[in-house]
Picture 1 (cartoon, helix red, strand yellow):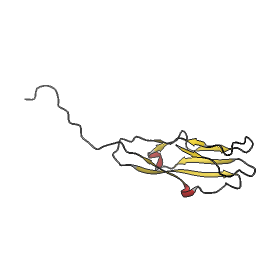
Picture 2 (cartoon, rainbow, N blue to C red):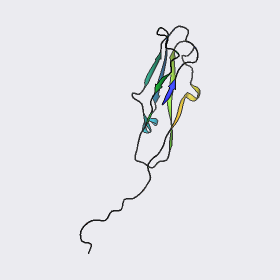
Picture 3 (cartoon, rainbow, N blue to C red):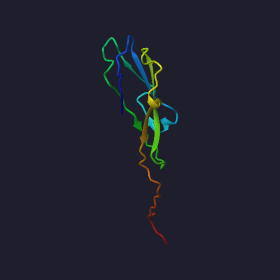
Picture 4 (spheres, helix red, strand yellow):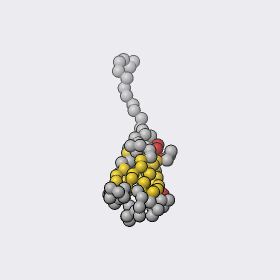
Length: 113
């Protein structure tokens, strides 16, 4: 999970934060929808309330090691925030690999000889 909230009150308009996964990242993780748009509203005075985005790792059945991927974050709306870059352009996350390359060897039932 990641939490996002503005540090400074917007001047006059809402702040929209778009959270998304690029094509490569979609091989490693999912979001409830892609993109997810979070709106921090001036009128409702919720501009400083943290909003949570759940990022779920994909189990790919491939022993590819732990894979780092980026969750992209862009901002629009209020002039104080529109076009501002999130440090690094987003959040780096890791999909922990739980797969091990192995063979299955099983005895076939019945006569062997």
